[in-house]
Image 1 (cartoon, rainbow, N blue to C red):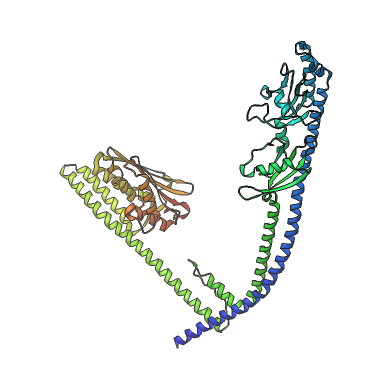
Image 2 (cartoon, helix red, strand yellow):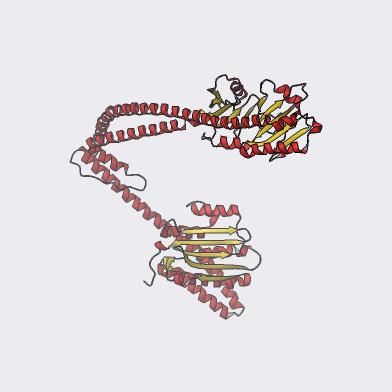
Length: 604
């Protein structure tokens, strides 16, 4: 009968779950796809419209930047061209040009200087320097902030290169006449022909920082930049990553472009699409181009895409949630039991049951509740067994320590008696009796801090008597913590460890200090020695052994490990030992106990 009832219960459970799954899946499979379809269509339509508008606006903005910057440069270039034309037509300039070099006087230099200074005072933000050279270098005049910008002018070199303009006015964006590597934008007028008696040049050097300011003020993205494209070369005024630079093919297309404005596209070495939007300057027919990556200029499009996809996902989640709410409401009797089962995981084994009618669900609910209750009883029994095991381990430690210590102490007392040092022997016997009195403590595991201090004082006195001047000790404990209660034998194993594994292993006189104080809500004790200490690798092994319960006893020792585990057992994971050590310098073992976990004062 018992087996039959178990079989019936299992079949009922299977049928109930199958019914729940079938009914709930029908609701979800019908409504959710329909809702997702309409949400997806609406979201994608919105995204495509917004993306198209943003892309169009992005390109319009770039075109506007190129157009406005080009207009500004055209105006400034026109001003410089006007000043050059006016200077070249000045009677004083023409007089110097037509004079024989031997007839040019200092007064002529002063007149030229007056005209040049007037031009620089009006256009100082654009014109960096003015250079005049007539009669094959017999008349040279230069005015500028930096003399290094003065060119090395050779008339035939310039005339052979520049001869197509009927007004002999040219724009230069090359290194001709300058030191190798220097970059200059110049406007100049040539005078005379190849074999003419009169020849020369008037040259305006434009400020490089003028272009830097104009080009850096453009509101392009981080990889975008503006560049000037002349027939000789290109000039950029921003540090550009190599992967964003235009290639020679694109430069050639810009230099040969017949249209005033336009757009080019190319792929950089990394495979990203680059876009070039250009406009032509009317003053000198140079091209002003904006270069940028298509991905970065369309960041807003990606932003809209992510927002749209996030909104679609959010709406789908809401739709699924609401549909599930409906399905849960319909299938509530079985769902309640399922949710209760899901809550049983890890250390949480509390089964919260609802009242069910006396049918198959009620039987199933009662069976699960009985099973959980039995599991809880087993877990509690296991915890009790583990606690008993730890207490037995602690008793074993005490049993191992005390006989050996008692034997050595009694042997030392015998030695004192043999030497006739009865008073010292009596003092050791008194300390020994007090030591064991605290150790026994009528079976109590919790004692006061004052008793624990008395315990280690007796222990240190006995050891000092045994080893003579091999070490000294000092105990400093704040009086206001003496009435607190702590786990018995917390400090004695640490002091013992400091003696046998610290000061005894090092030559010379050792010392041991025991400190006790309260700090930042913690009760702290420190056992410090100047013994052998530990290497960094050994210290890491000891720390790892303390934190890896049940393993690595050979790394740290049974007594110290027992102290650490008993502290955590009584006061939680925040309590325990902290160890600092340096080889040949000593060791500090710190006991940490949270004040909120301490028991009340014994006198309370």
